[in-house]
Length: 418
Image (cartoon, rainbow, N blue to C red; front, side, top):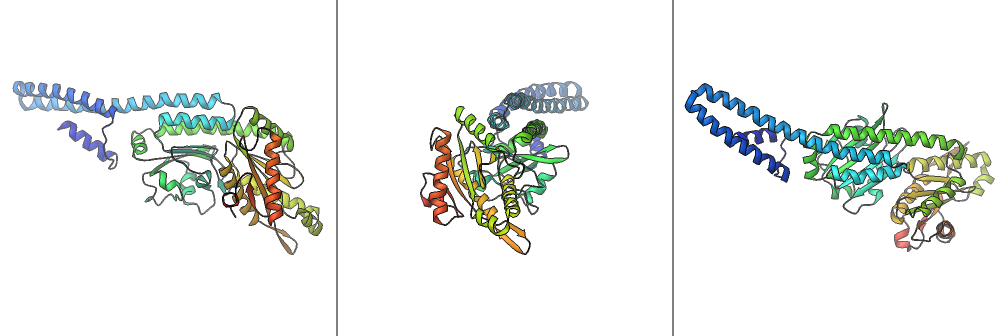
């Protein structure tokens, strides 16, 4: 009866969670039962020898013993979580490239947290409109386009993230404080949002989705473990920002704030040398010469600057956007397949199309065309990837109406998204 009472109290404290006997819980309850039997036998002996007062004293000791076993169980869970967290921390320190840090973090987290999907975001709330995960891992198939995180002022979920505190959503379909849409609704039932805070600003997010097993994990009272993880990621982001800030002074185009062509060549060669999958899109501004001839080169420069700003707000911090030529811009999507790169490239095209540039009494609407290619699918060398992206840009976009994004080697049904 004491065992059942303590389990009932435990369930009530944990806000109605359904109790499940996993392996560790069974072992704990067996130990608890053995102790209970021994103490109950002692209770009977004391009752015969000392009456009601002795019985009350032994009963008090039984309750204390049960509580000690309960605390031991909590400490055991916390100790195991800390062991796993130490491994995660080692991965964050070990891998130099920020993208690699995130990839290895997700693998390590799966040993600590029973998630169905986990994604890591970095963003600038004040300047970005949407953020795609730097890295994500899912047991079910999901496109990166379904993981876009809305950063506009009307975002309900962003209001929770802005508070900078860990938020546990037990049912994403019923919780009014978050708004989840698309494919994500089909593969997760519950969710944990872990903001990454640097100073006083939220600079990123660890999104963890799962089912009842994930909720069981959160009920173990180890939110502080997630806080430690968030702090470690904050340090990694700070280091990455500092490192990129130093590099930017020599490697960024002064007008567009995009990387120059030298950076593009270096990044491509490094990815191919390490046999790392990537995709790229080459954008060309439609009718750019006509814009220069009609409005002047100053307006042409402003068009380049505004389009570059839209691109920088729309890509992940680990993607590389470069000014490739006069009005050509290239984005390297690290670790993204062709379909995911195509989805993001098309959304960028739509954002550029909706951007209006004011010039005196005239409002200028600008469009771009884009060609997508991937490594190693479309060739083993830099020239192959760039050449195939450029080829499809002109053959399928420029010559067929412009304002399109097309992928090399795809049919129109699957490659065209407008």
